[in-house]
Length: 188
Image (cartoon, rainbow, N blue to C red; front, side, top):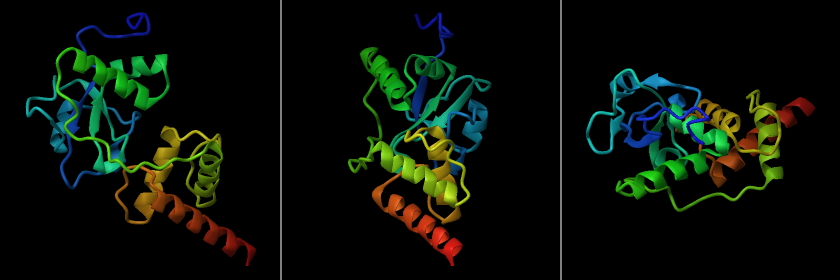
């Protein structure tokens, strides 16, 4: 089934990686494919300490839990998994589970325990708030997808935060307050 969707035999789905402390998180996202050689030049390293893989192999960096959680370089085969289910979390879970079944170790860096529970309507409001701030988050559809995470990252950059695109409760409040400030200025 996966081969029919474009799975490349012999190519892994991805791997957990270690990022340097000064890493530019704006480089993360499925739309930013670079070669393993380019990632290595930026200080990205395989958890095992071995080579990431063939220098010319393209991969994208994902940081699904922000800078405090695990980081992954994902290949074309990761995108094939996503054709089955559009959730990055699902595809990462499937890939990691397959690795564990094959004998790989657990994640080196676990996701942080603190997670924010946010409703679809809250995500819509977040998307509208980002738009009010002049940051395109895509359609206000209530889905906290890659376009919204990119927009969160741009807000983080503007406000001198670590631009990892990860939303927590304090950041949600900061975006709402900033949008309210813009709206108030428009009224005055």
